[in-house]
Length: 465
Image (cartoon, rainbow, N blue to C red; front, side, top):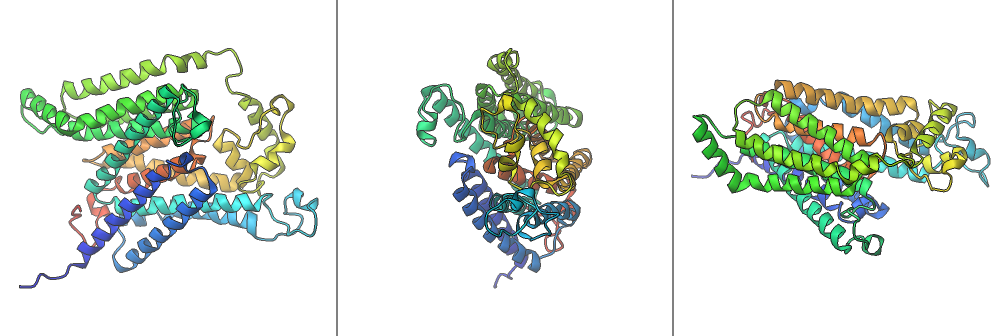
């Protein structure tokens, strides 16, 4: 008897493949300098565009889950920001709206709102890529088992990267960075500097803790002895991998001695633990005992070299506060139109205070101020409103989900970590970290909804593959 062809099963397999390939690409781009090279992010954008085309084709032949349809508002807001970046740097405007630099440019240039259309195009390309990554992972993570598989894969990868960072930092041998990092004590993994890597390591630490709690916390019913036996069996069979991963990633965070990154990691850790403490029932003392050892190690490790840097008597911000004040003073010269996406480096030079002019300020070291400077206040507000809507959805999902609440808890902690560190640095402007951030947000968004909203009519049972 012939087995009937099931299109929904084939669609699920294709969706899973799209998710895994996209996640693999997001993880691999961290290897060449954190993805912070034009050729890397351009190639990544090209590959993601191909994957997204398949995703769109798939959406035309199968129903869209309600969870994805409810992302319409943040998607529209985010898309509007990308369109504005393209308008700034590609649409001719009257001279009264154009950036003043075009009036002194040689020849007969086309007046634009943005001052650096080349960099603006790269910014729009990266933003579009992150959006496509988030959508593909959101569509692929509608099934809880697959979502956890994605997170576990990232957790293991982040552990291997942390191990690489520690070995390279202790030995002074970093094959990826080569001569730029051949000094013992530089714990940067494949990133250019520690402040860029620390956020990635913090995400890895949080993911490992979430995976550990997911596996080791499922001890079933019964008396305390049965629960302890089940915990020990689970711990030594697979959960230990993530406990060790949390230790290694936490050690990497501490060894970077990044003040902003360390504070952001602690903030995310507190959010993750608070979410589990308020929602989780049952478990064993051993479950929380292992977690206490991990958290205690991270806190003690951060309390050594990082604390010394916090207490240093020199300029703790490296001139950041002076730059922030200058941005806030001059941002009102073009508050609505902005200087143009990607134009901070060139346009801020004229306003750079002499006290910090010895350094090259190609970035503002505050993503909020830099986005407002480049995009203008309205477009920057739309960008952060889109992210705020995702954050609120995570909070709601954390309150509503009866199972697998660890996923929205993790992604909420990741958002807090990225948001805190972005106040004093630019972690989410690094392509590898930003792409990972987008992937995690996509996974988290889908898993904030109950099963009925995550299922399609073609797969009403929400079967995992």
